[in-house]
Length: 156
Image (cartoon, rainbow, N blue to C red; front, side, top):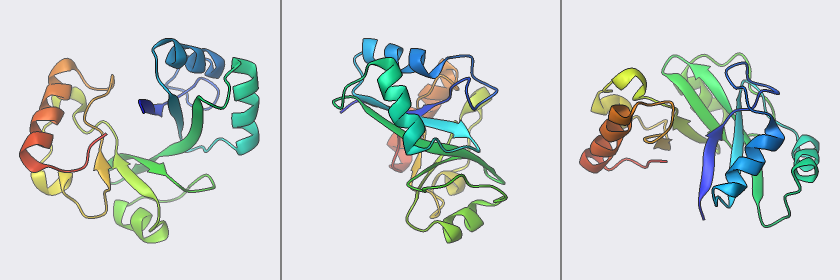
């Protein structure tokens, strides 16, 4: 299954200009089987997701889920599997302690062609690293792929 795991919309993230319905339509046109809307510091409710599904004309074969992007001392972390909006969490360690069952993914660590140290990529609090995204340059995506091959962390 091919799923977009990190997408913002203009409805709840000021960094995005895409309407949620258009986001779903574009994902479907590209042949994806689903997407996870990951707004900054906001979690879409099940009611909002169902309304979006209806507005976009997406049937149940197209998965629409919600997660959130949270700011931490490590940078942005995608949080999957929490049922409410997270606020006031500032450290990765605290995020992991408060939400032990959540999947925590370091978002766009190769942005601006940064090369994180292996110790940061391999932090035990993280479940995965985002290695390919339009938030990275082509070089940043290459660096992510290269370091994934070298260190064998879980990647999205």
